[in-house]
Image (cartoon, rainbow, N blue to C red):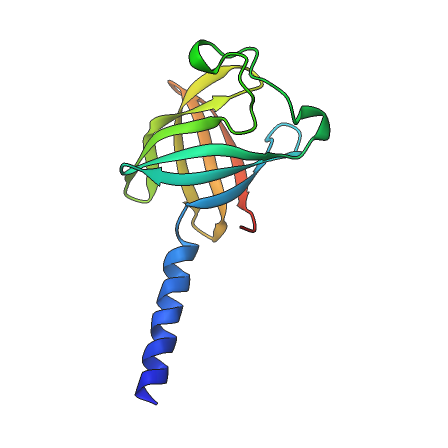
Length: 142
């Protein structure tokens, strides 16, 4: 009996820890149109968080490139592109990195955090100085 209870407690702890992680796949939702656009996989590398576009929902945009981007990402496929880079955990938030809007070709400072009432909702904020835009992304099935 003690073994069963211990196993159950460990299982519940593992589910709780996983539910509070930002790692994994997230459905991006355009804050201006409400359209679900893509799935971004958030992963950790060398202690920092990165996000890569792993799926594009609009069939007409499957082969879209970042034609407005500058530098190494110019004219590269958006599908497979890393759009979030260098985020570091600070308290309950991740900051210190950047996010790229591939449709506008613009890179912004970024802050991301889990919604305090719903760990399946991620707040993603891109900003320049005091001007910002926040999107809500939703946990996608792996």
